[in-house]
Length: 164
Image 1 (cartoon, rainbow, N blue to C red):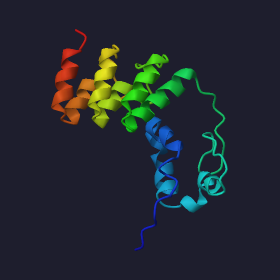
Image 2: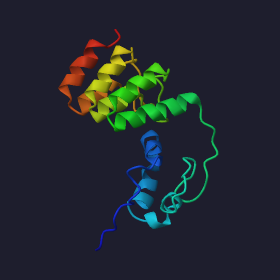
Image 3: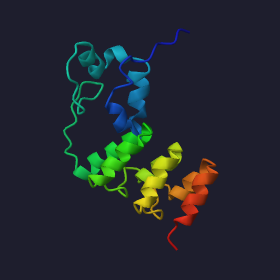
């Protein structure tokens, strides 16, 4: 069976930030980005050299939801964690992004950084008093996630910063 190539525009697609916020969107990624990308409205606009709005879904529908500053800040922070950009994370903190805000699953930037194994960003969040007691929709804290990924350094670091 012949495997199709992935979309050539995956690398710079801003929609991937949305995938980080909502794992349910993985279905879009698998269908459009990794298989039927020729049918993706975003891909078609990119091929024409047109600017692709973040509100355009792969099926051509527009998202009309108004997002808060907190949601934009959380999205930006999760994006910089995914790209391992410490300087960007520092800049976002300086601009006032709430490091304790969470996505729809209750994942905070600290939890995301722990899961991604981005030690320097975890250290940054802890220096800026990220709340280690927060839990996601599964009841897991950042420490629980560090234990799950078996990152001994982060386990030790998070234990030192736990609220008693």
